[in-house]
Image (cartoon, each protein chain N blue to C red):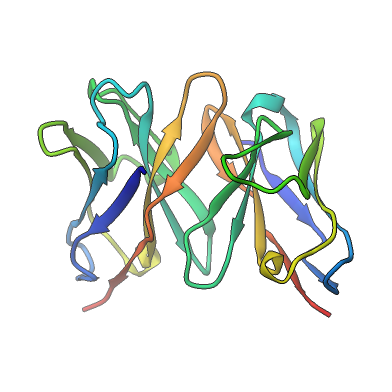
Length: 121
Length: 107
């Protein structure tokens, strides 16, 4: 059964870089024909897609994040990661990782349980 | 960017009743790019419907999706106690966006 698990610091200072990792178990990122995504949820903005990555390293990002985001993949560890630079309080949210169908239909399934990241000094 | 609007904001119903949730898009959405999710407190969203009308893995047949263009509907027939939750629609058009959600709560 495919499972995803987010990990990383729960508290980040303003102007610093938020770093999260998603560990995938039950399937291999490599050769899966899926993208792998980061999505966040805050009370202010609801659910917001951050970006997605393929095992080749091809990425798609939400332009609303103004180039602050980079997503990378490590197929040897079956993980993918998120870095978000110059964070502010508005980046406080629960961050989810998810498998992302990007060929044919467009959907996220399954999702990790999510991790709360608070931006505060 | 396509904006999704969901209505009503809250639906108060009793177990056994049916729920009809609406998702309206600011521009036409390809049906295969429209999905619905259920989220319960403290949990991640769970895929219910993809391609506007196909049920996700393990989703009971009391959940059904329909619609095309700018108007899509999620119907839950015979509400079960575990169906009281928040429901989101999602679309893709260069970027993925989600609606603000409809809360189905116990009357």
